[in-house]
Image 1 (cartoon, rainbow, N blue to C red):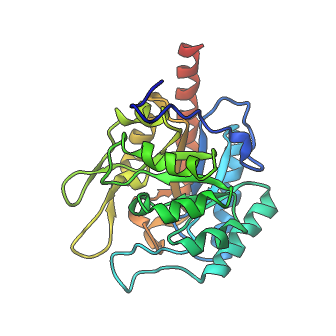
Image 2 (image 1 turned 120 degrees about the horizontal axis):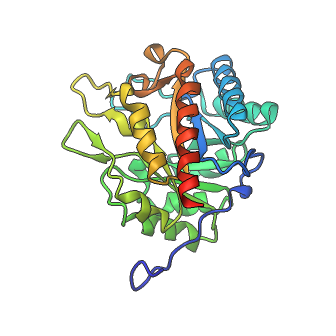
Amino acid sequence: MIINDKFVKILSMDLNSITNLRHLKSDNFFLIAGPCAIEGEEMAFRIAEKTIEISDKLNIPYIFKGSFKKANRSRIDSFTGIGDLKALKILKKIRDHFNVPVITDIHNVTDANLAADFVDVLQIPAFLVRQTDLLVAAAKTNKVINLKKGQFMSPESMQFAVKKIVDSGNQNVMITDRGTMFGYQDLVVDFRGIPTMKSYATTVLDVTHSLQKPNQTSGVTGGLPEMIETIARAGVVNGVDGLFIETHFDPKNALSDGKNMLPIDELEEILERLVSIRKTINSFNS
């Protein structure tokens, strides 16, 4: 399939390239889930243990996520992390203890090699996905790269970000949609973009960030967590390869993005229904 005169379709990434990713024969979507930020070892291990228990029960391939630092806060007094190496070591401890892959986001070129020693997947934040030096540095670590679609970018424009990774010698790349700006304080998910982005790379839907209410006058991002299952269902119906869901035992007191995170005690029931939808869709396609 020709995307345009210069770009040819990129085949979906082989998920087997992600170390310790289980349940790959289940034909389920894969799940990237965890807290927005690593707030401490105990909270991170509790969330990982619970989410792994659920994903194993439902045969969902699972990647634990957590930011080792938050570099894109609205206010200077917002929580940014517990210390880079401290948080990265917690991610590695989760990886080694539970034998699951882990993902974290990076924000500058020097972060790429630093984080690559601790995690399996490097994520490029949406605001930074056009930063060529950052993408090239990430690609050259030979880790799997997750490109968040910029809120300001069309689905079609993500082919150029994917091509930067591939042209840097790394075929293991995926795209994650996290909504598109709608005015100043809202985001929408345009599901027409899912098949477009799937023609470039494995495609994930970031359900919780798509429900943010950014640019609030308080400097604290709002959200619509009651819509999480609605958006996730639509993503599964429209064929996303994976879902991205931030979850926490106590979202109201989370130190970052609590307004749009899913309470972890609701995760299992929602995933059960999403798996049922996936099985139904698969039966139509078989």
